[in-house]
Amino acid sequence: MTYFSRQRDVKKTRKVHPCEACERPIAKGSKATYFAGTFEGDFYSAHYHPDCREAENAWNAAAGFSGDEHTVLWVMFEEGDSDPHFFDTDEARTFRRRLSQDCPAVFTRLLEREAARATGEAA
Ligand SMILES: [Zn+2]
Image 1 (spheres, rainbow, N blue to C red):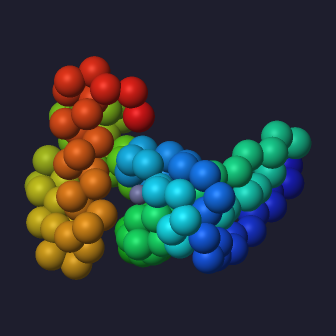
Image 2: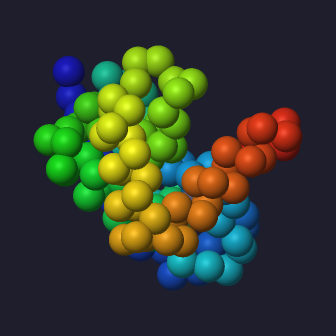
């Protein structure tokens, strides 16, 4: 098994990309974080809002997750409707409260994602 990944900053995106962490669009011409990796021979890549990626990495580091254990931010954000649950109910509440205080823009995008899913809007 080989695991490879790298990350770089994009100064200006040339087109709209969905953010891997919050699934909301990253506007054309804005800053983004590009991530690419291989896992068991498969290549994958993703774009992130820079602050989403920072928050996702920080919460993974706090949980002691690395490599293929890395968990996407929106998975952490969903408490009731994901299985298995990333957090128990108390931890999920703490996560939401701290995210809303520390990264309000990221928190807002995750709420927008939730609202969009509730109304059936495509990501
Ligand atoms: Zn995002």
